[in-house]
Structures are given as C-alpha cells and as structure tokens.
Length: 88
Image (tube, rainbow, N blue to C red; front, side, top):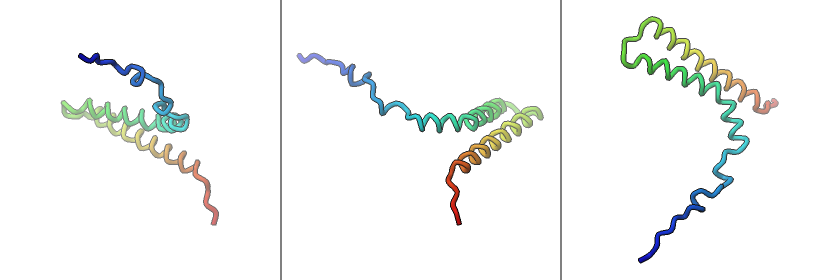
C-alpha cells in the first residue's frame, strides 16, 4: 500500500509573483473613489429591489449615480493628466 503524502510546501510556499506589485497597488488606490461610489450606487439599487421606489429612493439613486459619474470623470482627468503631451 502506498502512503499519500501532502505537498504542503508547494501549496503554502511564498511566491513573490502571487503578490501585487507596487504599481498594481497604486492603480487600485487611484481607482478607490470610483469603486466606493459604485458600491454606494449598488447599495442604493439593492434597497429598491423588493419594493416600489419612493421619492427618497429615487433621490438616493440619482445622487449615487451622480457620484459615480463624478468619480469616473475625476479618474479620467487624472489619468489624462498623467499622459505625456503630444507636441504638434
């Protein structure tokens, strides 16, 4: 009968390529306002799933949608400002 041996070291060994790089962490940090705004918008949508939206719900949805659009606009402006200018 053969013994079955676990491969604990191969599974739990630290591999540096599994961790995010500093550039990836910076990109995530730059996108956090957009992510947070989208989570708030999703929360507002979830609240209205099982009932007819009231005026307050409609206002909450509209404000959350506007926050998402503003966060996306700001993120796009920041990424456009980081691009090098093209001279004519």
